[in-house]
Image 1 (cartoon, rainbow, N blue to C red):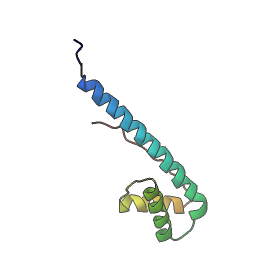
Image 2: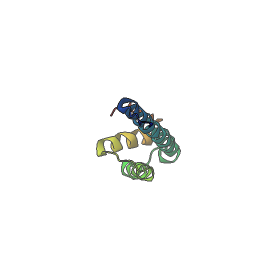
Image 3: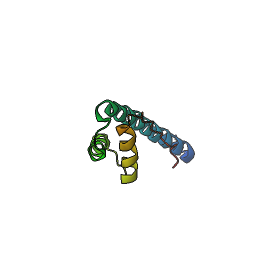
Image 4: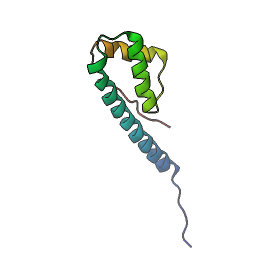
Length: 91
């Protein structure tokens, strides 16, 4: 009779890898989409840029706090490139 061996630590590592892969993909997509805004949003009113940034997050099923939204929108309005840093996933 064959048995089933379940290694909880290996299972956890595999889940962490899968989540990390998804988070990294999200970060790359978000960074690309936000940087694409720089060309069209430079110098526009901050409220308009914030609305546009919010749409990018929603399009990618992401959430953003108002302070983060203001930070991203201000940088984009000034023509700065955005760098999205994804934290390491730990379960």
